[in-house]
Amino acid sequence: MLRLRFKVIGCPRRALALTDTPRPNCPDCQGVGGIAHDYGNPETGEYEGTNYEFCPCWTAWCLPLLPLPQWLHRTPPGYSNEPPF
Image 1 (cartoon, rainbow, N blue to C red):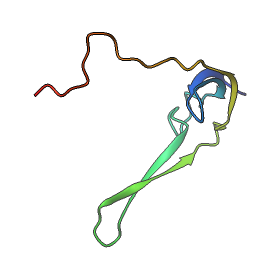
Image 2 (cartoon, helix red, strand yellow):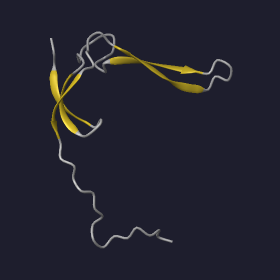
Image 3 (tube, rainbow, N blue to C red):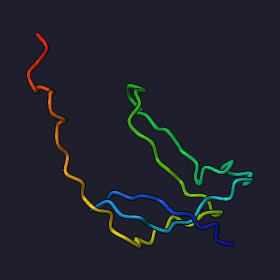
């Protein structure tokens, strides 16, 4: 069963999209939608990154519906772009 919701996405342009939601009472992922596995460098043991394994309770699809307008980003009057010192 799909649990649909609206979400704002930003790639390649901001848009309103319809997406699936992970099952909130899933015993495997506890409603997150996946399981993160951290890994490190075998020689130094330092953190290298994270692999994300999707849970079968969730399909990671996204259907863009409506592009959102691009607002003009202007600095309000009275503000300066010079450093304070």
